[in-house]
Length: 400
Image (spheres, helix red, strand yellow):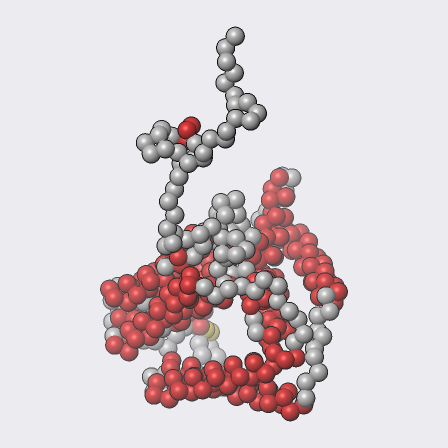
């Protein structure tokens, strides 16, 4: 009688580490030597801080606001899209990136349409076509409807629309990568109430996009049309109904958890908190305007630093009103510094490039010339790809 091939009860369990030189997976699970530079698999303990994604995206958006070069703007959009494709999950709030891309295309088309219909004060010599011009009264001087449309005007409108589209796409990248619930949990205690309102508003658009996709799929399976005005109206009503039900459920859950309770603090502390926070925010706004303006660069940085200190002090005092606690707070680790620092580096280098070579970042349209790609600003934008290699990898069953 042949000997049984399976292992009997009590036999020693073979090691899962394969011998060097042993053949394939049939001899056991191959051993892989890990590295501390290899990004870990994302879980509750290793997930990246949500604020790091927003700082990275805001850095890219700041860089996009400093240029109208379509090549640099396309590179920024490509960097954001690559990181989103590499590190987003299949959660409902992560599926809205495509909607932001379509919104960016809509913004560009709308900007071109306004240029065609309302004209532009930009002079041009290459007339493409002319529309019938509507005469306007004297009090509407400076505004025209119709008239000649030049290639210079359309190109300027395209540059301007592409910049706004890049800003929207960067915000969409942050919305697709950062978990809104974890972002809310990481906010300072003084901003918790305002943070709840912002996070609820942020999650409304992704959930609405998911509802529209679900309803379109259901109509397609039933053999009903998904395009046209009638189909849009029939889809819009269930979407609005679902949004209303979701808002009522959110309000009920917040009420059940005691949302809105605050601790008693002295009136002097409240007034000091309001003064510090308001003064800090005003200082930060003035400092940011000084940094962005060419004439205010000398006083912009000190005002920004002073406003930041005042705002932090106000938030510190305002946190005494909150009675909530944090369960498993998110940690800001080295990978979060890398992700946030890459976005800040892109913004800082593009700001510096705008002072050294503004013509490369803002190509002219009169005379009509093709834009050129500046090399070292383009290399600076590529620093934004760092999160695609440093951020934790989402699980395979949740990644796209």
